[in-house]
Structure formats: structure tokens, C-alpha cells
Image (cartoon, rainbow, N blue to C red; front, top):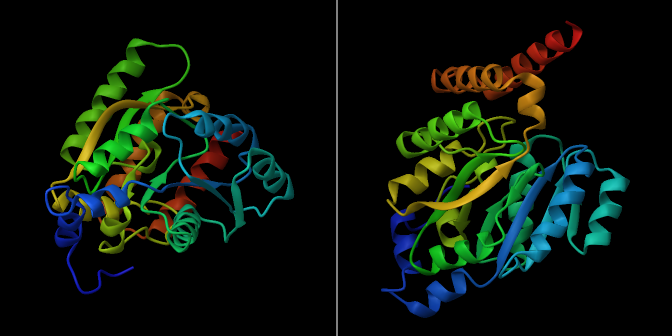
Length: 263
């Protein structure tokens, strides 16, 4: 998506309560959650009830299924949320879900991974932040499971990374519709699909860090090893910054995972 007749800064300014309180209120009124999934039924079965119980719960939850699974569709029907099939790939899935949310009149967009657990007040905090003039924001990364010194250390490192450079999708990125429409949006690539959006939001100086935690399942981290997965993620990020195509990086990631599984 390309910004049309106005810049991202001017779009955010229009959402500011100082400019027009009615516009600011409407931007936070209808909150849509987009959840990309691929054979994530167990995690989704935990997430969907949580979203429904949030304070100031979202008006819409859209699950975008890269596997087009009937079991996932049935799970969504049971939870009273929307399900839509999509081509596989997190960027493609998020873009499809966001397009559907925008068509349904969403004023704010919230991207949540299936294996994450939002804080009970997170939806309310999003509405407050956007009503106060934020372009978008994210939550504090927190590991699930038992606490440990290593987890706390990595969480602190991630918090510093977010302040200094990049925020990724497992931190529950949210954005006003006006800011999203004036940004490059979510890219179609399988990795780092949120980078262009986050960079555009940072340039507005209204991309906020909310103190509430977004708890991330430790299952994949424990499976890969906390330090090994951290090193792999940083290596992928560096390779992306050096210009290596995300599709190539995804193939490298899957190949390294397959080698580890055979060991």
C-alpha cells in the first residue's frame, strides 16, 4: 500500500484529539484483531477466549488461515470470530486480514500472533493510546512459563532493541487506520513483513511502547534453546538489513530447523 494524497504525519495529526476530538474518538472506536495462523489450533483455542474477555474487547477478530483448515474454521465459528483462508505466508495473511478489517470499517488494527497472550487491559490501553494521538504502538515482550534469570535478561535486551531499532510482530503491534493507510503497510514477504510499517510509524514520533506485557509462548523458544533462537533471530535480522531477500531467509531458516530435527 502506498500513501496517497497525504503523508503519514498529516494522517496521524488528523487523529490527534487536539485537531479534532470526534475524529480521534472514531479512530479508536472499532478495533479489529488480525491473527495469522498455520496449523495453530491448540494456541488459537487458548487465544480466542482471552480476546473475548479483554476489557473493552475488540469489536472484530479475524483469523487468517494459511492452511485453509476446516478444523480451524470450526474453531473460529465456535468462538464467534471471522475466519478466512489465505495463501500461506505471514505477510500475505496479515495483509488479507487487514484488508477485510478495513472493508468492515475498522478504525484501529491490532496484529496478534496465535501463540501470544495479551494482557487483560491491552485492548483498553490501545483505545486510550490512539485516542491520545498515537499513530500506533506495541507491548512489552514477556516469556511465558517459569521465570528465570536468562528470560529476564533476554526480555531486557528485547526492550532495548525496541527502543533503539525494530519491533516485531510478536509484540502485538497496533495502528490507527489513518496511519496504516498512509504507510507502506504490511509487506507480502514471509519474514520481516512488519518492518516498513514500523519504520513509517517511528518517523511520526507517535509510535508508543505500552508497559503492559504481551506474553509469548515459550514452546518454540525452549524447543530451539533460548540463546540459539535469539542468535538465529539476530542473524536473520542482520541478513535482512544487508539486503538478502526474505524468501531466501525463510528457506535458510527452514533448512536449519530441518537439520536440527535430524540431529
